[in-house]
Image (cartoon, rainbow, N blue to C red; front, side):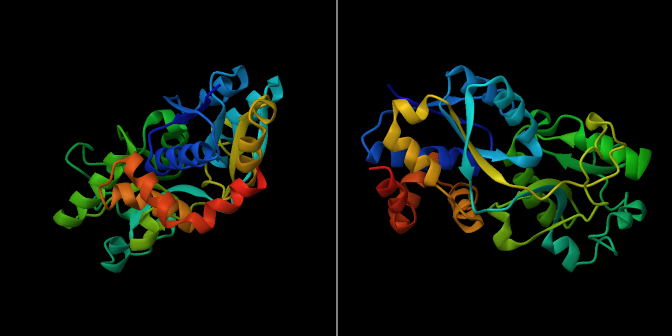
Length: 286
């Protein structure tokens, strides 16, 4: 019976899917890959249609993960070494060129709407978010609450659209304010996250608050169907041992987003270059 691994719409997640699949195959397991909804995947794991999730980001997916867990059928398979932050910010060169004095303090944006206006923003400052399926109205609510009607949020069609905007903005010499996350390939070149008022549980509108808060720094977990330890005991033990740090995850994404490799080729290359990282996980499961 194959281990079913989901793929989503950002580079490190897809590359890691093939990395983990390659590790499972090296242990003798069969693997299948399925494109899956980023929020709905936890219900799919709970129901047994998907076997694992290997990048459960606390800020974005923690609620869906715990909701599925409360129903039964999905288990916490451990936490990666990498700490995470999902937030909007600016490429390092926006800071270096002082295009909006006072950044990364969020209050500097109150005087910089024109700096971040684009042809499609109607004269307002623009925040380029990821796909709306990632966070729903979290960022529109925050921008309205803290920056008001002088700003707007545009949703990108994919993670790749964020990086394309970084490239075009740099060529045009314009400032850009986009969603990003760490660990990611952008850690190497430099990206500065906006410092919003601190996150506290319940501060978002969906949780009963006023959304005048930033994002939490969080964990990166792994999830599995509750039958996985019995159907594939060696693979499950290896999966529970897997722990990637920010450098590992950023380098996986960089092979695609900087070097232009396919996700599959990137995984093959990463596995070949990092046996010392992943081989010990398999030995724990043999």
